[in-house]
Structures are given as C-alpha cells and as structure tokens.
Image (tube, rainbow, N blue to C red):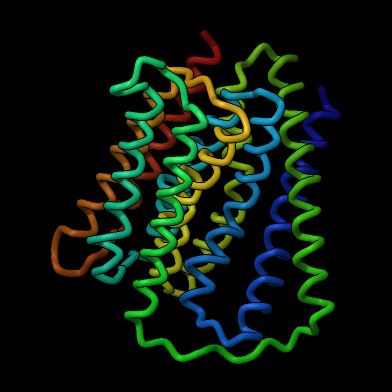
Length: 318
C-alpha cells in the first residue's frame, strides 16, 4: 500500500515538472517567432496546464477505466473553479475584462451543460454513454473554440514579445522531455491509483474526483496563484476557464474517441455542482460595474468545495 502512494506522488511531481518544461519550451518557441503573450497564454499555457489531465485520461481510457477518466476531468474542473479560483480570489479580488465576463465564462457554462446532456443520453436511445460520435462533436467544438480565440486575438492590439534567448536545442529539448515526463507521470498516477482503489475498496470514481483530480490540477494551481499575487487577473481567470474548456472539449473528446465511455450517473451530482459554480462565477462577474470576484465571493467557492469534499468522504465511509 505504501509503495503505490509513493509512486503516485512521484507521478504527480513528474506531471508538474513536465508540464512546466513543456510550457517553457513551447513559449520560447513561440517567442522566437514573435507570437504575442496573449496568444501564448490562451493556447500554450492553457494546453500545458491541462496536459497532465490529458495524459492521465488517455491512459485511463486506453485501459478501460471510464470512472477514472470522468472523475479526473470533472473533478479537475471542480478543483479548478472552487479551489484554484477561490484561493486566488481570496488572496486578491479578481477583476477581468468585459469580454471574459460576457463571453468566455458563459462558453464554459454552456459546455458544461452540454456535457451533462450528452452524458445522460439526452435525445438519444443509447442512455448514459459518451460515444465516439459524441467525442467527435466535442472535438469539433474544441476547434470552433480555438477559432474563436484567434479571432479575439486579432481584435486585440498586441505588440509582439521579445525573441527567446533559448537555443533551438534547449527549446526542443524542453518540449521533448516535457512530453516524455507527462507520459511517465501519467502512467504512474493511473496504474497506482487503480491499485490503491482496489486495495482500499474505494471506487475509481472517488479516487478520480479527489486524488487524481487534485494532483493533475497542480499546474493550474501554481499558475493561477502566481498570477493573482502579481495581480494579473486575466491570466488567473483565463487559466481556470481555459483549462476547464480544454478538459471537456479536448481531453474528454479524445478519451471517448479512443474508447467510448460508460457514464456513471452518480457523476451527475458533480456535474451539477460544476454547473452551479460556473453560473455563480458568471453572476459574480456581471453584477456591479467592476467585473470583479470579491474576496467574500471567492471564499464561498472554497467553502462549497470543502463541504463537497466532506460529502465525498461520507460516501466513502458508508
């Protein structure tokens, strides 16, 4: 029992370090070609911080662990919203541009509701099931989202960033090591999480929603808290919202295309929590004139997640 815990910890460390190397190498490559910081933030950083979830979910899907896939994705989104954004907003009130309040957050809300409908087989005879066709639909929406992001970037008046000082060897070395580290770390987390769940008699769903979800969200946690401390609110919110969109539209779609996912309807509670939390964030941002998530509103997010975690623990104990 002790060895799987140690290996999971090593897996998480590998995921965080590898994601950072991937982001650093990719960002340096982008700067070499004078791509703006906004482009880097909305694409490379968002993908990089979601890379652990991507690798863990793909490996879990390949090995037919549907509950681990869903627990990782839904649990990570809840952790991102309630803990990462909640803690960041508790440190410093988070203000965002009007476009974020009126467009990006509603997009995240709509996507979450769409997942709730698709997963429960709304309008389909297949029942609670995420098919390859559903995955293709989600993946198509992901490319639509990317197109939207780039059209928004064109509207921004951004000067190019300074060229990277990294050599080509260092840039590609960081990218390669980052990708290999993600694969290794993801394999360690998935394999040993399943072993631990079997040993303790805990469902893969609970393991995915808690340990795996929190561990794979560490890159988002570090990124958003650093951004909040530096009072760069758009990065703090954009990282969370962008990662949540990536998790559903990219990671879940790829996982379901690899192998269709049986949807455990017990996840509906977790999806409804995510839907309610995103709606709360939207209301907090559009109410008033400041487009700000105040400390007391951020504290509500943290308290709700703590209550949710207590609920999960009680379910384990039953």
